[in-house]
Amino acid sequence: MKFVRYGPPGREQPGLIDADGRLRSLRGVVDDIGPQAYGSAGRRALRRVDATALPLVRGRPRLGVPFVGIGKFIAIGLNYRDHAAEAGLPIPDEPVVFGKWTTCLSGPFDAVAQPPHATRMDWEVELGVVIGQTARYVGVADALRHVAGYCTVNDLSERQFQFERGPQWDKSKGLDGFGPVGPWLVTADEIPDPQALDLRLDLNGERMQTGNTSSMVFSVAQIVSYLSHFMTLRPGDLIATGTPPGVGMARQRFLRPGDVMELEVQGLGSQRQQIVAGRDRVADDARDLLRLR
Ligand code: ZN
Picture 1 (tube, rainbow, N blue to C red):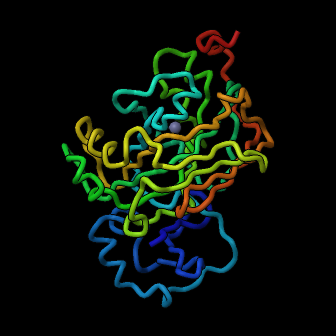
Picture 2 (tube, rainbow, N blue to C red):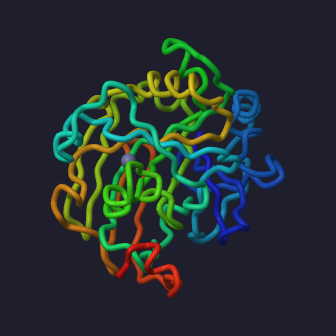
């Protein structure tokens, strides 16, 4: 199944994309696309729903993040060999783990406002993994059983915040709008092999990133197993699994207002975001603290 949430921000309605690519409403069937829909019991129950009997949604409403209940938004760094090489960083011995704050989540077509102190914004197309069943200390062979489905994620980043503000990545990854997710949550039964998916990202119509999940250093199963030994993974937790080569950092080309990103993971749908000038301002009395002068 392809779950979606449609409507204005904060007032999204649950829906699905039918076999003909049409948006149909799940109102009255589920309250929202939460664990009750994408968890193992929910998916079993929804399989009995006749999609052709659900009402079609008119027009082309905005799409939001395609599911709710994202307690944690975790990301893996340097997980493609060729991307580690372009970043000039060694291929990691263990997964590089960092957090994206859940306040960075946004819809797949929402504009991204440039933060006022951002100078090196960058793009990263990634395979997103959605947990469907609580995972603690799970083995690699058992890991994919805990996955509800997959989605396209843009792991937007600010390279100056990432590399020049201390030994962490978190400050660069969780700004508002830095986590577009969707358009769909595609259930795992439709993605038999998550290690065989093409990824691509275009900037202003020009191809920047091309990759395939077969080039991951650590597989989805290894990542889920590894993380489950450091935290309890809960239904709804979202894991961005790393990006293939072609990011702006390697090209010395950073995002500016007016730029348009279009990105897609095979079978999971494509996103499109425009960068716009932000309206926020750095507080005057925080400029020294932020080393802005
Ligand atoms: Zn990333």
